[in-house]
Length: 528
Image (cartoon, rainbow, N blue to C red; front, side, top):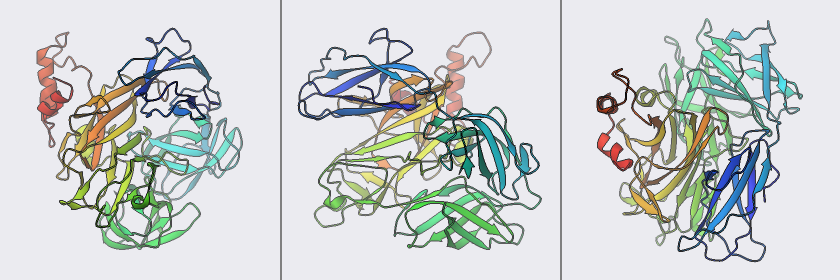
């Protein structure tokens, strides 16, 4: 059965037909259903439950196009690998209620450009907006990296008002409107942000992006204009959506970097970083700090699925041992804001009995959940501005799994159609970039370094993009980058075909630069 669909997602539910199944295969077709073989595989990692009774399996399929007919079917797999017959064909009709932008203009003076010296109000016209404050406007920089999201202050179905924050990075921005009915395409027009006469602080990245509540900690804030000549920032603070402002202790300040201490009294929530420089300040940051309540897994008796982190056991018997199955996920809730216009969904599955160590000792601290973060300048310089980056574990210590142990990470990665094959890289502490993961097998699936493509869906989540589902086995937790490599090397010498000379040029490209890629590892990950 297909659940009541929104504009972009649907839940499939079904009852297992027998006990002791190995898994399921799910396929999806757009516009019409011809047969099983012609439909697109959908990644399904459900562990089958018991047949009979009221138990039902549920699988969420997202990234659907609004106003579109889809068809889905399921086959079960038994322990010997045999496939069942194809289920009934479920029909899915997504609603056509996603917001759409027709135009926008500034309230004060009109137009679509202004400097970043102060907060400005922008009026956005279009359709399918929700009344009140139920819409977010995403400002997408043309550099492909910087995004800012702001909640509308007032709205009806055809227009809304949103603040353009002071201190927003200079440049040109497309707009999107996001609400419970979906996400709009990019606006046709661009909003231009010019530099103010007096430089305004700009916050573009924060490390770490998450902090467990009650733990405090330090943050490294990067951006621009934190120091103006000999003028130091007068205050740095956390700024909540409700206006709560929490001052932070400034440990050090440079033009593009701040180091601050966060008090232990900060409540759970999402916070902008506000930097005040005499009479100038930024009203929002491109990244928010997330303070969350970790789960104490020491007393847990069942599996855990959470967008929060976990507190590891610290008693003598279970210190550093994960006692139950844990599935940590990226936060895609409406309270969170995107750090990229290409949002990854990430899941990390840690099996019971997994040992976690730091510096060779049992780790009894907090494991931060997976979170997408903006790429640093060094990563962009090596892999390009379209690189997607995520992190998990601990920012103060590198966390390792026990000898021979791995955890499975799966992620949905949206990229432009025809860009190539996504590969996952490990961002090492010394700045080098190498293939992530280890070769291995889990649940009868073979994984290789760099990641295994589990499913591919074109024109998802919007026309012109492809979403790859990637699986990778990791033996430690750290920071990772995802980017594409050409599916085929280009005709670099212009002789009209792609041959060995072009491949040699491509290999040379991968091995050159300040952070060369190990081509032997790279080739091995694809079975060559």
